[in-house]
Length: 192
Image (cartoon, rainbow, N blue to C red; front, side):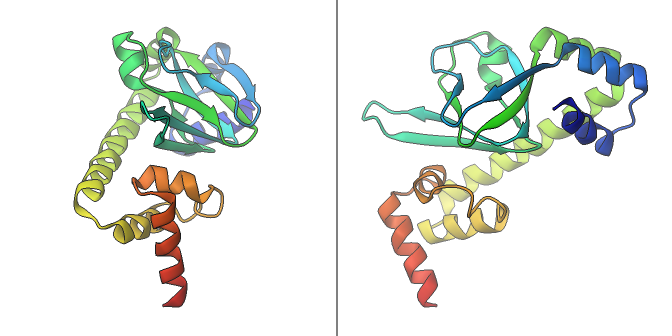
């Protein structure tokens, strides 16, 4: 599993053998079964998590029991709850596996040490955070500005590799429409 993470890192930055060994020394390897949680609402998130294999989702449940998906995390994506991690506050979210998954967890104190000791890793983390901010900004814009059909088209264009991998009700939750609305949109698109 570490080989996948190592490949991800070395595709993006140059790391010495010693730096790779330091990174590996703090990695916690975890296997998840489909529907297994790594975070429950109310817990404090203490890790940086990288998905080596599989697929996770971050979501909340409202008072009516409706699921609201915040993020999907397939292979080579990071996941977690940054607010809980940085503030030490109970999480508002749940994270579970959509598929059997293998992830790497790095405790926050170890992650901070890695970023101090390996400047190239720190630079990579900053680039990832900047990219995540832009993605979040675009998602907010789409949610407040786009019609339901435009939201779905935007999702397809942004995540073409996920469309056939995720159940339709999860896509509906992610883009903020009902499953029935998404079914109508998809049928309408098939007729075009």
